[in-house]
Length: 111
Image 1: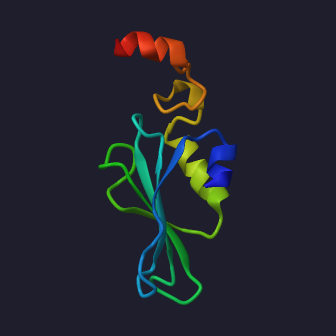
Image 2 (image 1 turned 90 degrees about the horizontal axis):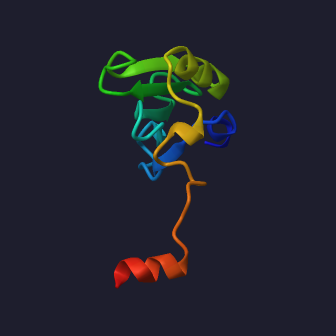
C-alpha cells in the first residue's frame, strides 16, 4: 500500500485476514469514487512462490478479473497509470487534506 500511496494513489485497505489456506493475501481499493479499482494480491495460487495480482473495476478499464503475474508493485502501478487511473489525490473525494469544520462551526451547524 505504501508504494501505491507514494505514487499518489488514494488507497483504502479492504481486507487482509484471509484464511491460511486461501491464496489471497490482501485486497485494496484504488481511487475510490473515481475508477474504483479493487486489487487483490495472491500468493501460491497456481504454483509455489507464485505472486499474482487481480484487478477488478467492473470491466470498465480492465477486463473482468484481469490478472497480472508479477511480484513487482511497480508493474501494477504502470498498468494503473496506462489505463488512466487517477493518481492525483487532490482530484479524489477522499483526499485527506480537504478542509474540515472546526468545533465552533460544528456547533453552529448542530444548533
